Length: 380
Image 1: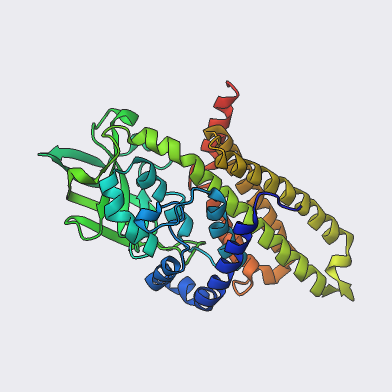
Image 2 (image 1 turned 45 degrees about the vertical axis):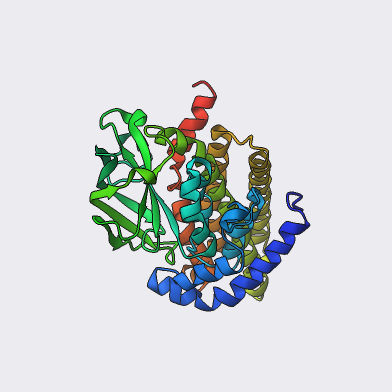
């Protein structure tokens, strides 16, 4: 299905980014997978070539363009090159918007130039060991100490957690008050009491550094409060639709990659004297998957258009994440089946796509939570 979402400037950006990845990322793909982390030099190269902070104002070193289509390119192209776990979207779609929307002018001037240059990597810390999708139950606290705040608690499953230089941390400033007491803080590398725990070993997205974070009497200055005290939960709810749409964009891109791999393999692999693509079972399977692929793509691109107009609702974001990621699990599984035993071998890209896909229905809000949001929109 021909896509009509992008314009010439996005196509040129895509070509440039794809060329950049082939030069700076593809040769290091296996190394990053083995080490479980992407080199910081890669982030610096991204910044130097203008691929970071496109939405950051030009006065702070960014591109000065608020256009989600550029973010989509940054999500899609690495996945099409089987680059697992490059954490660009965790910065550009899931953390940076908090600084752009709610940060003060002083904060923007202090932090954003280094984000755009790739010197400062971002992460957001919401999830806790005992509070996953239920953000109102978070136990991390930030209590006043003079004009500043004393932060205590822990976070888990934090993408970019090892590399991050600035972490947007959600904490309770009025313990026991649920959503009304959540505030966002910018915690910077080197602050006393801020420690990183294990770099977590995952079944997929293995090049993505994912970590535990610990806060032991971290003194966070008042000037590092993002937005207003007590407004953190509403900020999270306002920003989560873009995060969920970005996850759906990734799902659509990985579906594309999986079907391409399965189709190529089916044309080459022979059984009983002919390519398996000539068997009706294989042909009908791939035809069915292609129809599902088109449905996912149409929904994702339609929601991207809504995002461009500033009209993407929380309900629609939940629906697109739910549908795209659940279809991704099914489609990638079927594409692996086409590969037979070879699909189970990690040396084949389809195996990586299979393990990478599994987290998609979990992070950014589980499928069960997405269903609850959509059900509420139906009045049930």
